[in-house]
Image (cartoon, rainbow, N blue to C red; front, side, top):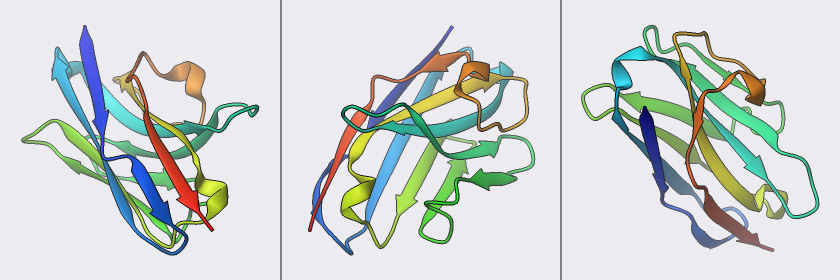
Length: 124
């Protein structure tokens, strides 16, 4: 079993930056990829970014490409989401997810474990 704990959310103004962290614990040796998803009230869960743990290759949604960066720290079993130039439409609960052995994917159903989420609110 792998446990994920997110942190770093908060209330910021449009144009500000924020960095989310997701620390993994437990049987992390099987982790293939980790990703970030978000869900705003009344909307479906949306893919944000993902990283393949071995190579560090990344994928992003079009809505965040160029503004957000996903990073990993192998030694700490932690993945980060650096969010710059935040917009009000980025407001959502952000979830970290992990996938055993598989490549980074935009499909949330392919991920095996999830964190509890951290709220990000961007005011205009």
